[in-house]
Length: 240
Image 1 (tube, rainbow, N blue to C red):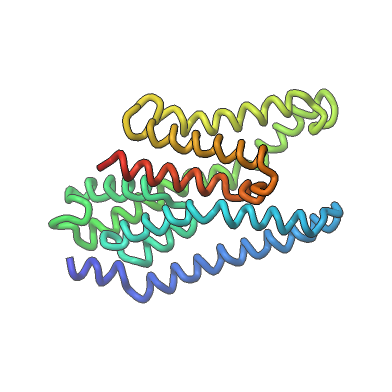
Image 2 (cartoon, rainbow, N blue to C red):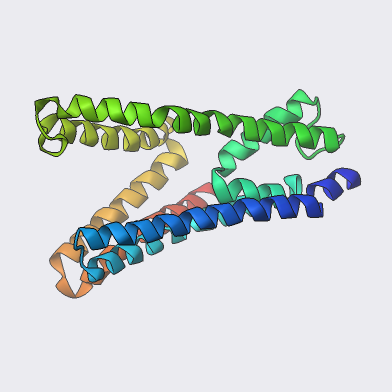
């Protein structure tokens, strides 16, 4: 166990993960610079850009809390560098734990338990990495082709933005995305369903409050964050 944690928290892994996070931050900076340049070309008001940035920052607070919790959960098992690197790029607690567990089972030992040595740790990390590489490479290799084909298909009846099918497709994609997350608690029932209903009710109440009470209009930027926190609190209460 000692040798495995020594490897999991080795300086080499810290250097590698720091380089990875640096690349991610550089990419974010490039996107911001290009976005601002494009917004200037389109004559988008600075006030509108600031509001969009404010809303994006506020709505990322609650998801960031979940990532911190996930980090604290993974660190005792996989060490800080691997946990930090995974959650800084593409990982989530549910996937990382599942993949790490599959790796440990392949090594015939329980995850983080007795017998979980350097070999089992390496198997877990490889499993976590390979699982996420599939979707990354599909996106890198196939997304441009898919996007070009989709745009040509939507533009057959005229400009893509003026094509009614485009609006229907985008609406269907959004509904499908949300349905994917809503279906599980609805089917499972119990605490998951209670949590979802509590968040939905809070969102509706906040929406009505912002709509009917002009002095509370500023609250609209916090609707999602407050609803998510409400769901988290309810989940803790009903799980006791």
